[in-house]
Amino acid sequence: MILKTAVIKNTNSKNKAQITMPFKKGETPKGAIPFKPGQSGNPNGYTKGVRNRGTTTRMVFDMVGILPDKIFEKLKETVPTIENSMSVEQIIDTIQAFKAIVDKDTSAAKYLKDNLYGAPKQEVDVGSKSVINIIIE
Image (cartoon, rainbow, N blue to C red; front, side, top):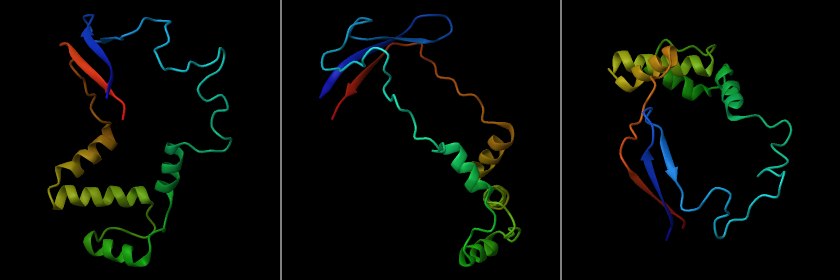
């Protein structure tokens, strides 16, 4: 079922879009339950000690010697420069470099360049009118 329709239109020279909503500022849309004054959507926040995704990923990438022997030996057959003393991040980068050079894999080359130099900024042109249908299932 289609709930509401919003129209996006270009409103300034910097190509930033403005969304026109089907209700006015300060109004509560039908069926919405507003927060109580002074209360956010998650008043208690994260449980203390919970790590964010970036911290957890960094911890895994820094691990050394965690590959099971069978997997390590199979990787070593494909990419002989891999050593068991490498971190997970070094192994991933070595495999990607091998793919980029040996297999001529442009995705692997892009991965390495983006990691080294940063991904290029992507821009979206919002110069034309668009209609967004919000669907609730």
